[in-house]
Image 1: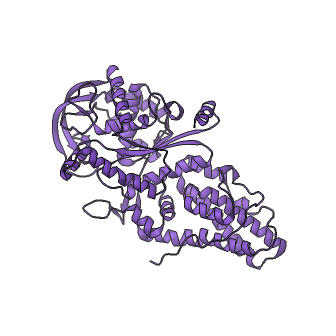
Image 2: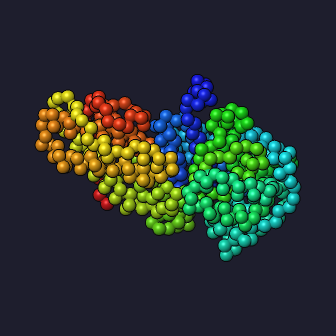
Image 3: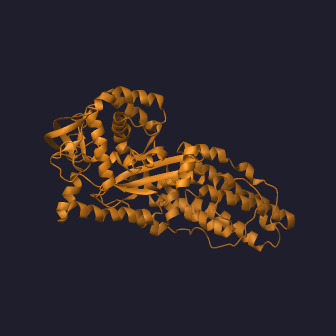
Length: 497
């Protein structure tokens, strides 16, 4: 690992630091958690495919009143409670083949010490002061809410009851950084992504910022506030600092991978990541992340997921019934990344039967069936490469447009199927058949490279059948076919709905 870090400093490798939110461990993960983490995994795998040095971070947020109450209800300590629930996340990510480089927990000693160090820095700068907080608080979301933010007297995020709190607290001078935030947004147009969400954040900041409470005296399950240990640190303040503590701030890997290239988050926590987090970093004198990408919410058959409706989707159930790569493909193809989406099993089945079975599956099966029967050397002149625009796909992925990137890949798949039909390849012989098989096998090889981040298991199956090794993005061009065909079974099974 040290030789890689040496070359990183020389600029030989491109660094890429991508994070998911750290998930709150009050319940088991659902389809929303799986979506965020899978999409981040796709980008991490894509950058590795491009030869970049990637640091992919995920983890769990384990402090706060909600955890304290859940543990009390079960008659166990908060630490025993979180240790138990965290396994649901680590086990889930293993089952979903998430290729993270580090899993951080906010109960990690290193994280707790980093948070205290960070707090002291802001306090010494004069950006933390003691006062009294009076206002509304949503326990389920661990969020302080102003009178103006209430919707019919309830939490604007989850719609549940809020409670009035009044207690001694320490504040962070968020209001001090209003002008600096607006100037930063103006100079860094790609920080607030997607663009459809930027106006909301900018307008809210223009309307004025209030200083925010960052400690509690009534909640004991939290990191002790280093300035006054009667207080514990507010869970959201603690959580945000994980992006630094994971890199051993202020030294360690921070000097290699910071600033983060992108924080991938759900839109419900966009404010924390695009307003509060940057202000904290301004105060600490730390460079800001390059981007926060806030994606939309998933509903289920048109309805919001909730315990009361009993409609939360278990990703492991979807994997078991339909397949992991099938679920990953659906995440990418059903909606552009960033938009709200609806999870429908009918739509998932349609994607599997149509695009996976009929397009990709049939292309591979038909081509390898013909190639396995061919008794000769497979060589030819590139014909199918003119449909392929790898540079366009790279640009789309840099812009987090997985939807259209996959569409470009699929255009090559469809062109290859059309090639089989128009040339009636099954009727060809000799050099004509050799040339057609060369074009089809090279097309599939290149397609396999491109789908690797999206459907890694499927890509691996195709590589084995093609008899080729895993390859990087720079091999996405037609060359001499050097594999040894060994056709397997169908890649995907049609689902009878």
